[in-house]
Length: 228
Image 1 (tube, rainbow, N blue to C red):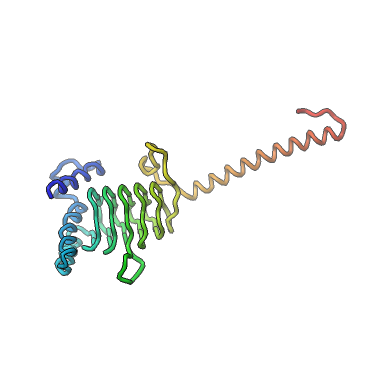
Image 2 (cartoon, rainbow, N blue to C red):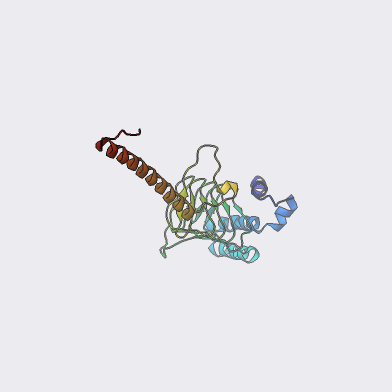
């Protein structure tokens, strides 16, 4: 148990450059408090003490502003940064070393008592205000941009932004950093416009080649020497 608590503290130091001391992390990080309280509520929930599980969960929500259903499954090294407004539904599953920022919702789109919340695999980063809705999987090491609304499967090592969420970056080469790791968020519209300009330049090049060939052919037909 103490090792797991220490690992949670280390996760904060690894992913938040503002963390300066163990005391600061232990007493001043609501995301960490929410994780610890969830462990208690989840234990009560899995041992069929449903009321007490919900009560501890509600207490955690009151103290931290982070709402985690006691039925949700959360792995090791999960870091909720700032955290206010984070909502994690009952059947959500979160893998190891996932990072969630404030305002994230892992929600459902069904009223049936089935798996209706997303599965977040390990090393995923979900930006502030993002909504991930439905019983699908967000693959390992993926990135979801701030305020995105994701409603379908996300492949591994992908970057998704926008409303609805669109994949703007697939897997990188080994060791290559993504734009998000450099602190930049991909712009799908700018990328699309850049692709259009590239196509226009390619069409202009082909047109100039055809026009040049046409001039040479015309000179030959007129009996004039061609300039090749």
